Image (cartoon, rainbow, N blue to C red; front, side, top):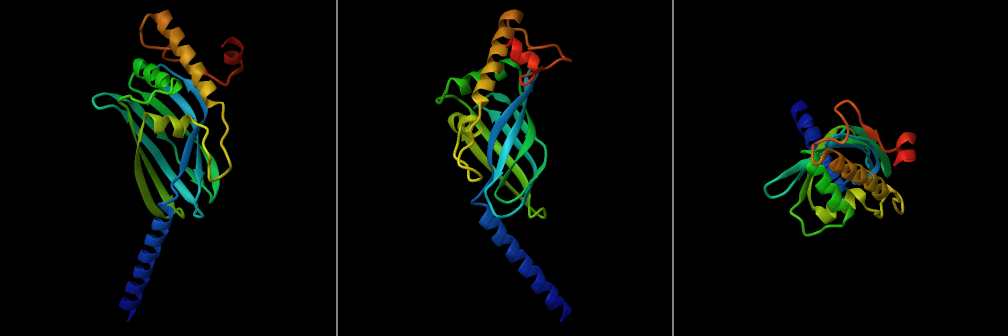
Length: 209
């Protein structure tokens, strides 16, 4: 009798978990870069705004992205963890780690120039726990246009009507620093030395850049 009760309870949990996952799978996180922070030799620190459009609380374990072409790797994106309540948005800190200085220069240029027919693909993997308990992950692929629109566009969101941001302006500032570095160092890798970084939101940068 006890075994039957346990088996029934496990079956109910399994069915309930499946229903929860299926209902959530149609409402994946909506992501966008909200702010660009420090810029290093081949990396950019970013604050990614994540909107949870479902009625379930979600604990994001981490977001990983592989940026690549048919034969080249442009870099990766890795974020930290964050719990997001239902129908809410939270900022998740992350880093875009480019393969090298030239890759950073190329990808930033593509995004700002609205390139489309380019050999680029972003594979984004999101690891979560629904209700802080049920493990759930999904993977999506984006071409350059889709990737640029998702992370650097002004899109309609489920959490609010629109997500207005000056992120393209911040990205232009990154491009300006990259261009200056290319001229100064004649192609040598590095915006700053190995121990210094540029913060786009600092008063020093805003007054000089």
